[in-house]
Image (cartoon, rainbow, N blue to C red; front, side, top):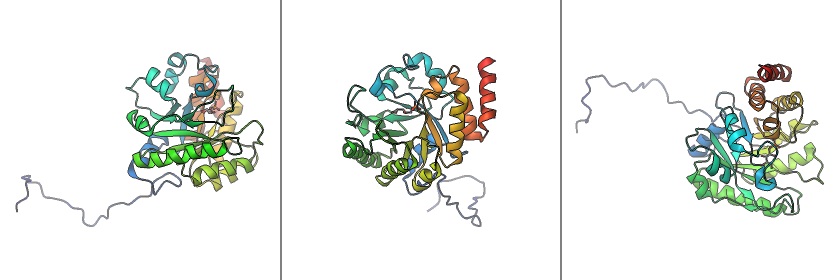
Length: 292
Ligand code: R5P
């Protein structure tokens, strides 16, 4: 049977060059499906292996947080600088232009407000709707040691099961209750449980002592939350230390959008995370951009 290919050009099969079979660049993710890996590659840069996510999902339990009163005005100009946007589906549909090419990490748990017991969360987004919104990952809060610990873990595992069906990675977010000690021992416990139960990546807080043991004992990537607003140099220093100790990125909110110069701060954080610059250099860059 003749081939339906009338080109006069000689075929070339490169029989002496074996097809490459490269390992996926991201820690613990090599055995995931193609769609999962593709979505993770929209969050973590395949060049640096790291991510700078901009978190502005705080309204899901605390309403119009300082700096987030008007996301259309304060956050949209920042969005272009981030690798991924962490937000709720309400904000995505009401404020974020569908023409955006940014990757979306969607908050998928919720329920109680700051007036109630925060650990009493349920799943807040059906995976079908997350797929419809073309998200790169969904995020779920896990309250290890909290009153509704088991319920929050079930939220994670149900999202992981649904995510596996659709190729959507799940970000496990470790929520540390006020009564808990924020130390490496707690973070090791919380992050490891998230990973063991199927989270593709985990968000936690940086701790000054022994953070390396947290990243080492978690088999999937860890990104750090920023936490409450710090002076810019301190926030940049925290990011540097976290990356140097094995974190693969930041998912930072208040330390960026509550800064006097949010765009400059986000760019400075990018320099620390993606380019490996020192906190001092990044802070100098921040100041130049802020005053320029
Ligand atoms: C908190 O629960 C929210 O999910 C935020 O995404 C998270 O805390 C990161 O924001 P921040 O850097 O302001 O702590």
